[in-house]
Image (cartoon, rainbow, N blue to C red):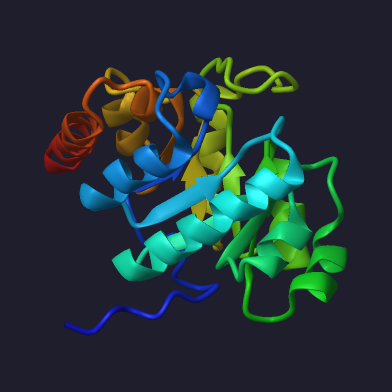
Length: 220
């Protein structure tokens, strides 16, 4: 069976966008958690580890790069542009206070996807105009997985993006099994989750439950 080539245009063609967060992973390593994600059909992994030494992050990402390639999944690095280049990631995700998109593009070249976190219609329009391949939309709900997170933007901003922005987007921030259907009803076909998955006792069961909830929203 042929594996679909991952490109800047299709990198978000999936339902669940998983992020690593080892400190929330109940003692499991990132490699254990990523393996469980991939074994249960996840096709997009973002590596986000703020506090680890760069050498350790490099070693982990080399292994995750191999795992995602073998599984036909996309691999995105959060913030660390040099790390993304070194391990040949499919994408890099940056925030509003990181290097501007134009500078990132000069570093990563034309093949790597660039994602940008956005929190307002103005930021979404700006990201689209300046060449982001996709945007993060949120935080939809309050989240505690990041120390510098802004206040929740709710559904008003998500609704704006669905109606007005042409590039792909992923909804993020406080999304759980008990609210993911509502997010899907508002037009998000791709959602990012952190603790809801990495904290789960059984990652496979949690992914299945999340997909069932998203599908139930689409069936209505």
